[in-house]
Length: 94
Image (spheres, rainbow, N blue to C red):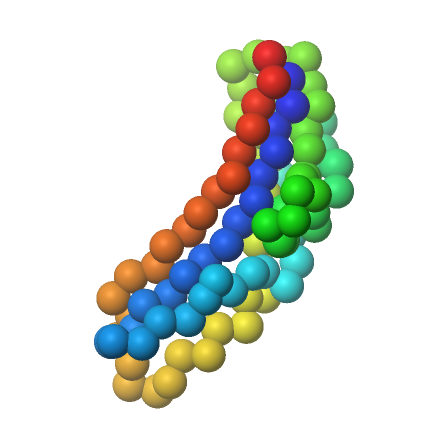
């Protein structure tokens, strides 16, 4: 079984929005019940058909987290964030 992920975030503040804003890096964040690490986790940074992958034969277990960080948000002082949209492009093969 393999899993492929991609992340992007769009921010809406008042009537202005930013995005999509991609993370500066993505790492294997641990925390799952499958001991296999993500291969090329940084490939999940952009929507460019390069994917982070996890190949395992273990079924019904949680994968490690993919930790996306360093988005470089530019939120003006006094702004109110009305919503954040996170998109995940996922694919699994049985």
